[in-house]
Image (spheres, rainbow, N blue to C red):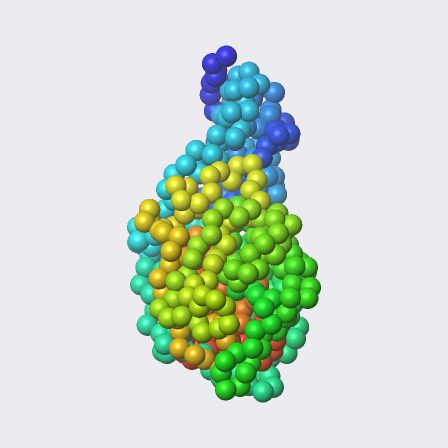
Length: 401
């Protein structure tokens, strides 16, 4: 049956109802702001019986705003066609390649005020930072020495580092992580968990990593990844560095948390790591996958609006290993993390690191115009993160809880 269009009408808002199978999500608060600023400049679509097919969240925002009428494009069609319209409204937007950040920045800068645009001043600053990376005050890979005792931070605290956040505590504490995010949804996850290899650093201090033993590793990872899946948007990209010898433990924990592994990336270092294995290690694997998707999210990864990179990304990452550093025996280089989060997280988006260590994810987020949300169990390393960010940015961190 073809679609019959009856025209646009102003209808009583209470005569409309949402479709019971609507799978799409929307930001009602942002739409409420838009309505207050511009009014309703686009009609919603509904059947003659009042069932909404497109514009559910605009209808919700109008009701919340106290509107008594709403502009509606009234149509008639059969049930199958109605369902296709219902899901196509979001899906057709998903098929687009996203936004041009430079053109978006130009348009936003030309606005007198940002109210109603869906963007705020922090978004604007981070977009600017993405296009024109900041000049760091120190080498992004530099990290201060690990203190014997924490000087500034303590377990349970939350810190703001400019637009970035740090929670000092366990990544298995989902409620605390949600509180730290303060309503934000995670767009991408990059993390470098304990490897479960009883690591003892080869530095003069012979440092060890918190929780880095094989006992209980699987449960720790499952609980932490479950936290990540809870606070992330549906279909969020996930990067997990891990030891090759513990591959099955890591993948099983990801699967248990509802995260699907799609590929394995390989970081190839510029030098071997001397050890007792028959073949000296010169690489580390990184699992790459996605949190569970949801109806209306659309395609994931390259070729979708969620992919921020180009078509040349390879599974092999040739990046020099950082110089030996006493603050973290397995510190990852910023140049390893930055391209991955640039591919998978939009400008101004939130990158979650469940095991923040010395703060390399924070440095990568700072350099690429993303917002880091960090969890670190050891207050000594939290001190390192705070001090590292202040040196890098020239700004002052603030304890907020």
